[in-house]
Structure formats: C-alpha cells, structure tokens
Length: 387
Image (cartoon, rainbow, N blue to C red):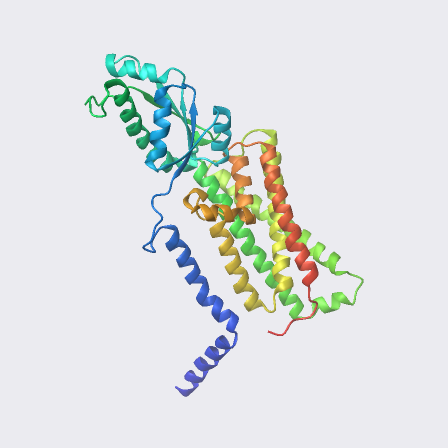
C-alpha cells in the first residue's frame, strides 16, 4: 500500500511542479465553457434579441414602402440598410447580410387592389443566404405581420379593419448561393471549419516533433553545419506545407464524395480554391514553426498551442456560423486566420464568389504566414531552454 501511495504522490508532484501545464489544464475547459455559455445566453444576462441584418430594396418608391421601412426600423428586430438590388445580392452572397427584401415597382397599388378585389397578388422577393435560413424564416414572419399592418392602415384606415386571412401578396425566395438547391452549404462549411481545425492540430504535433529533435540535440548538430536558421526553417516549412495540402485534399475529397458538395463549376473558382488551400497550408506550416520556436518544452508548448487553436476555432467561425456570434466577436474574427480560410473555402464552394474574393483571403493568410514565420526565425533557439 505504501508503494502505491508513493507512486501516486510521485506523479502528483511531477504534475504540480509544471505550474504552467497545471494552469492550462484548468483554464482550458473553463474558458471553453464560458464562451459557449455566453454564446447561448446561459449567463443570465442578455442584451436583448439579436437584430437581423437585412437589406431593403425599394423599387416601388411609394408611401407604403416608406411606412413599411419606418415600421420595421421601429420594431427593433432588424438592422436595415437601403440599397440597390445588385448591391444587396452581392452582400447576401458574401454572407454580410442574412437576406434582402425587394419590393417591386407597383407593389403597393397591386396589393391594395388584391385586398379589395382578391385580384392577382403581387410578389415580394427575398434574396436569402442559405446558411442563415433560421434568420430568414423569422424575418419572413415579421415582414408578413408588418406588411399587413401597414397595408390595412393604408387601405382601410385601421390595422384591424379586415379579418381576411388571405395574404394580398406572395413571397418568392431567391437563394444567393450557387449550390443551395442541393442543401450543401452546411456540410461544406463544416468541412471547411473542421479541416482548418485539424490542420492546426496537426501543426501542433509537427511542432512537438521539432521540439523533440531539439531536445535530442539534432538542432545543435545542424547549427554546426552550413545550414542557416532561415534555410532550416524554410525547409521545415515547405515540407510541412506539402503534408498540409495532402491533408486538405483528403479531407475535402471525402466531403465531395460523401456529401456531394462541389466547387462552383467555373475555372476561377477552381483556381481560387487551390490558392486558398495553398495559403492555408502555408499558414498552418508557419504556425507549427512558430510554436516550436517559442516553446520551452513539449508539455507547456502543447497546452498553450492547443488553447490558442481552440480559441481561434471558436472565434473564427470553425465551430459555429459567424452570424450566431455577438457583433464584437464578428469584428474580432477578422484578425483570426481561420476565419479567412473558412470564408475563402465557402466562397469558392457553395457561395460561388469570384477570384477576387479568394485572393483577399489568400492575401490575409499569407500575411499571417509571414508573421508566424518571422517570429519563428527571430526566436529560434538551437538548444533546449530550461523549463
């Protein structure tokens, strides 16, 4: 029994001796729980209902549309911006807005006539981001109620003047994603997010391999050779990037075969997807070098880097679509590389965006690559640092 207790005490003393690892093991689950709890409003405090960002395209230019826009703004449920239909389509297709409402020319006159005479009902047009159908459905219900209130007041002079349940207008949904009809957007987004998370976790393991090589004295031997720190890191980075691209090819290949989503069938989208994949692989490879160059030992480096990756995944939209996040987190996500990679893949697969949008993501990912690589080059230590 004494022998058993000594074994237990030894392991506990070793565990407690590494204070950083102890802090990380306790803080990681707490931070994750706090984030998810805050996201779903479990903290007991809320800022009220989250506003839905929508565009309002007024092609009717009538008193009715002005009253409708004012009424929707008064409701406090919408963050509305008036714009042209082309601009609205672009913003919805990029995911900047949940949907856009297009009120066609002559809508008010035709809807009023339909209420009185049961003539042909005019159409509202909804431009929808298929990844945000929940918001679109809720907005559609609110729009119907508000439209009926404004119409009945305009036609009858009172909101409760009619009890006719037949709507004097129709709503036509128009998806702004090229693959929306296959319902592929959730699966494609999930593969983009999880592939990036997997890539960064693989980068951590790659960094651990480098730290083991340093602990075994391999880095010290290399220092005595003609290999410069730059050449050493460049070689490691290129080999890591090649392996990362192979991982991405396998992950997305599985998604294409099993879930049947595909890259938008245009040359620029195939090129854009390839460029985003290369940039994401380079970023992941440089992140691994960054972890290895800053790490003191494997235990501490693994804990800190896992916490960093989980934080980037949470805040970068790898786990949850960004529209579920509070506005300040959506702003923070623009400074997180995973967010740009996921948006780049989404844009080339199911959103059907152009090469310019892919190049924007590629540019930001390459900036992160240079930042991680530059820090790694500056902070590389050829010999193990005392814990």
